[in-house]
Amino acid sequence: MQTILGAGGVIGIELAKALPAYTSDIRLVSRNPKKVNDTDQLMVGDLTKADDVMKAVEGSEIVYLTAGLPYNQKVWKNTWPKVMDNVLKACKAHKSKLVFFDNIYLYDPDHISHMTEETPIKPPSKKGKVRAQIANMLMDEVANENLTALIARSADFYGPNNNSSILIETVYKNLQKEKSANWFCSPNFKHSFTYTPDAGQATALLGNTPDAYGQVWHLPTNANIMTGREWVRTFAKEMEVQPRLKVVSKFMTRILGLFIPILRESHEMLYQYDRDYFFDSSKFEKRFDWTPTTYEMGVKTIVQEENA
Image (cartoon, rainbow, N blue to C red; front, top):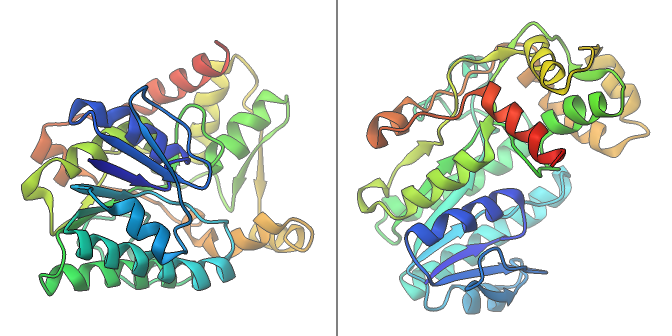
């Protein structure tokens, strides 16, 4: 049995699509689970409840933690450590391997112009400090040989049928509405994005590769990174619309954040847009002989599937 905790999000869905290449025994766990494959086993569970997690993990050879929480620093601070603690205890109790889908918020901002698995951990944001805390909780268990686990880390992501991507929300959907695409701080810096189908397939591959455990892996992400302006042009060209662009400054984000909660929560993360942001996945690509989806093909697929 391979179990996905937090199976309802875009990454959980892409992972569930990829897992039948390795197993026919797949369990999807969330507050409102829905089948991705005909043979999926569904289980209702709340990851903040230890008993629910213990039952969800029982009988699992591999557990994938792909849960997402509301984008609120107070929720993250209060809830993520509890979720991770529940999952770690359940995996140890049932001797299950653990694959944790993580992001880059814990990295030192002075190093995000070229991020590798060795990038220093020095988060500048409150959300980043939470991510560092829970990643350390996991890796401490690995170091103490209490758990077999790995971290699969992604850059900001984009992909089809995805309402969790800031790129989709601020660029694609705005252009779709004949509005200007929004980009934070400056459109002249380069910014990596991980394609969600690549992320799902690669996470499944890592989980089913015994010698991948005990490590951090950057999920495959195209290295030919584009600037914000180039992202807007690429979407606009595929959509056959004008590449209209509006830059949202840090000051404007702070003002709008008084009225729009998601912008208020995003303000501490704007350092990711005032410098180059390059997510290097060459370790994964070399180990698995993998070529990430090009950005042009990713954008083309998004537009085609949305209009199908």
